[in-house]
Amino acid sequence: MNLASASLTTDQFARIDESADSLFYSVPRIVAHIDDNGIKSIKAFLEHHLPRNKTILDLMSSAYSHLPDEFPCPRVVGLGLNEVELRSNRVLDEYVIHDLNAEPRLPFFDSEFSAVILTASVQYLTKPVNVFREVQRVLQPSGPFIVIFSNRMFAEKAVAVWRFSSDEGRIELVTHYLHQAGGFHAISFVDKTPDVDESTDPIYIVMAIKQP
Image (cartoon, rainbow, N blue to C red):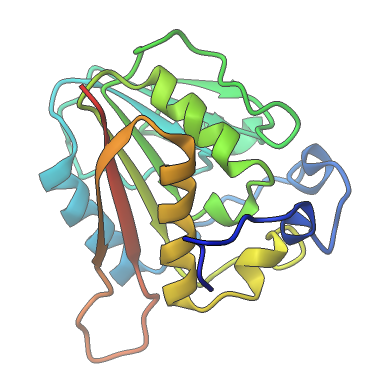
């Protein structure tokens, strides 16, 4: 995939299941979508890259937010689709039910958050550039936007361009979204796949900083 010279088409954001996301996610799934080794790797990364004692938005949140244990943060806000999952998430101080595919605009003020995390869900966005622009709007200047993903997915709800891409292509895709959204700099990638002697989920992280 060469995204530098090609524009993504509407067909590339088609899904096998085009029913309303609110229906698909109406049944609570009180499970982690990354295995234990992957979760440890994510927590270690966030420990070093999240600002301390600041407000964090967990975008497309669920029953678990993989913040480091006892991480100092006065306010963590989750945005997701299933209230049972969000209510059971012990990390969240508050939550909002909101369907980003139906309405990409985030229901928050400009520069409301010091950091935004998107974990294991970017593959489901049908209007990712619009959402990333909104992330840029609600982030404070110099705040990090951290996009974490693996190779797991609900295939029926993942967009076509994600389903048919390699891991390398997905890294390029997220980077492309950030460039198209604008307002970010210092875009970087790190492979945080755990180095363990057993099968484990790959962990890929693309991070960008809102321009000052």
